[in-house]
Length: 289
Figure 1: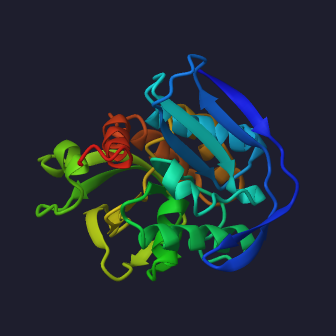
Figure 2: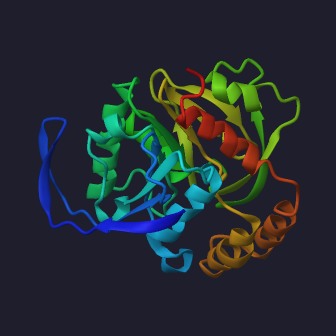
């Protein structure tokens, strides 16, 4: 598989929920095979960060493809530069099987055009549960919560969380069956990588909290039949923490020497990132149908 640039588009106007929204569409990439297979499932990575040291939106998108893709000729992956204005259209809910919304240094409460447009896309998807599924990760998780009527605030401790944590699923797990088959009946908690200054503090109407941790009450949320979110980062690696997150956040003053030491110790423990990624992929693939 390889990344192929689709094209660059000029400004255009489209109708979104019967409102005219002008969207600047940036570069867009497709990750697929060369075989010409005609029955591929299509997934979109909605990238909400463009940091150069992470490889820009293409590098961040590739992390999601590496974590959730199966390197199969039957899958086609597209990377949307959402933070540059490339928010999917409503019609894309009919042509894609699933979308993954990435993390971001932004807050879900920021009054920024691309964030507001993405919230509208999520809100429309929530009203059309038979269409594409959505998985939100960290900022994506929080943005979904805010878009659907929940509340996003600073972490209860008022401290930035950078470490691996034990995430405990609800004993009476009532969430999606595809996810339940993998994580819902575990006797032991999952250990996942965390990196966040905010969290979903209050659930939207109708949402169900499926898991919690010591620093976040709502680690995993089933928002609607077709939308789920997770506060942790199944797509991150320990290497990402050692080479990027720990030095960057320490230099930015978001963690101190003690926080740096605790993070380095915690990420050395055995992680369940791959298990959680597999569960979320099954959800996005509608394998419960």
